[in-house]
Image (cartoon, rainbow, N blue to C red):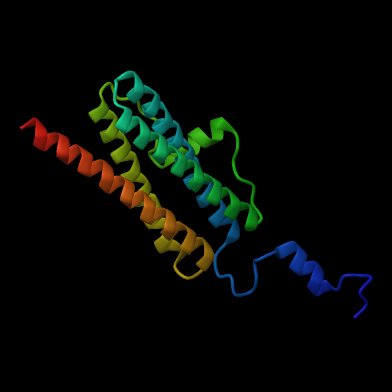
Length: 178
């Protein structure tokens, strides 16, 4: 093999990166779906950050810390999805308008409740919407893209944990209010 000039196989490997003949999904469709989920993560980040600011104003440092921690995790999820999008040959959406549009298509829009309980409920509803979106995509992918499936399963696990924590908080509030 002449090392001074890439062969067709090497050129193809360079162009396709990790996409081989064993990759059974449509990379463009996966990138599109991952960009949509990434947009929901960014909208979630913004909502949690806003709630953290407002929790401080409402004298609730415990929830402020929880909201901030959840915001940080949402941003980490967006970063993981962005990295996978790039690996698949796509470009992570960066336009705020496009991020807002795609998040809204998934039913995710940043909300601002007037009480801490309202904020927790809004965050719970947001997490549940993401659970539905992640679960749906995981099922659609099946074994067509094992790496993306594993990534999404990890994010889904954390998202379900967040939903459980938020639900537990609201249950506790309801029990103490009786």
